[in-house]
Amino acid sequence: MQFSFAKDQTQEISKSCLKDYPVAAGDTDAELINFYNQLCDKGNRKNDVLKQELSLKIAQRYQGLGYNLKALEVINQLRSQNVSSRELTDVTFLAGVSIAQNALNQMRSTELRSLTETSYAPAKQLAETIRFAQPTVEKPLESEDESFKSKSNKSSKSSLKSTTQSKRNKSTVSADKPSKPKTVAKTTATVKKEQPAVKSAPAHSGSSPFASLNK
Image (cartoon, rainbow, N blue to C red; front, top):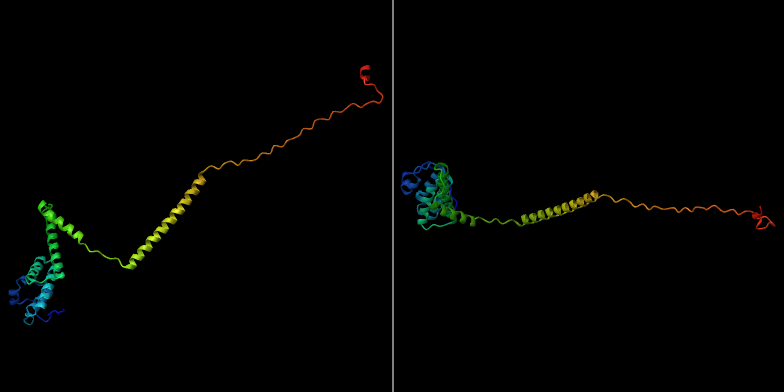
């Protein structure tokens, strides 16, 4: 249900409203004042649903401004009326975490000390519970497709790079190996030595084979 701010009203909470809601004492935020003025409006006093919605808005506003104790006080009032909602739980959690964080900062920066054994145990349990309760974000189908394409492209590039590098390595190894001397077939030419022909002495006709001895 939507409701408008009563901007035409005076920017202060009436005394009668402060009696019904003492937690509003000292508030100067214009949005809070408008909420309280609507909450205390005579025309809305019997509208329990609207009053609960306004109280939730007040608690959320307190928490957003850092008034966490006031936020929890308003929440307790709603709980006493058996009001329960996710928004109310969220405000309760945020206010509690902020209070714990402020106390931890006080220990570390001002008091210069660590958590005690007594305070560390519940803090550790809270941290573990928060870790298990963290939101899970589902990726859109398009994002998954893009992720798959990206991985495929990376894989292809990696494979191509590996192949290119392998070729380069082989080329480098081939270049580093000493080249074997070429075997030149030597053709040994066989030279036939011509032996001088033996000239025979001319034969004299009618001469005796013992002519040389007779000389």
